[in-house]
Image (cartoon, rainbow, N blue to C red; front, side, top):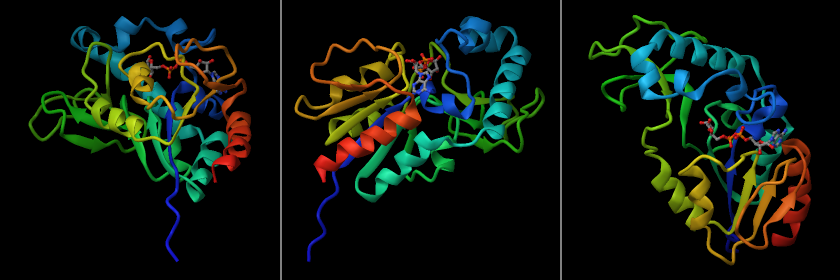
Length: 233
Ligand code: APR
């Protein structure tokens, strides 16, 4: 008997995906950008001006990630792999999708558990523990920086992410305010006849017609999504 091809489900996730794991989002009322100025901690200029402050900011993020656990939303998304060919495109720098067992995760904005050379972006090092210190260098002798994409930097993974988006049979957007480009533009690559689901407790402005908004937090939202997806099997 021939195997039935599993529908290709692509999920674009943002900070709201990890909110129920206790990680702060960026633009909510108690979000990270309420407490920090983006230009002080998340730009190449900030790194030039005050690398110590940048390291401290990301060390705190890394510590929080290592202390957090995947939530039910991450787990249910992994469970969808049973019936769907799931690709996750995440803007998150945490590793909670991987720790929930998801097999295909593309990180658009880098990964906090890795350091990279500040002269060669391909030189990556897994960080042991939560702290990356000034003085820790790559094999070329340059200071290691967090492996994250800062504002003003290019997003090298956007092309594979766009290809995945254009190949989706079902598209799901979870926990992102869709205010940061180029990630927010990925929806434009999703073919017009592909059903799009949005999981977010707040209203999100999307120009595309016919988007099904499940207005819930990620854990409950993915549970409802799972039910609704039964019609695609
Ligand atoms: N479940 C689902 N969604 C939630 C939850 C939750 N429990 N809590 C909050 N949200 C939603 C918010 O309503 C909001 O729409 O998650 C979204 C978070 O939006 P942002 O804070 O803007 O995060 P994100 O869209 O991921 O930011 C994009 O901005 O600063 C940069 O590089 C950073 O990757 C990040 C990018």
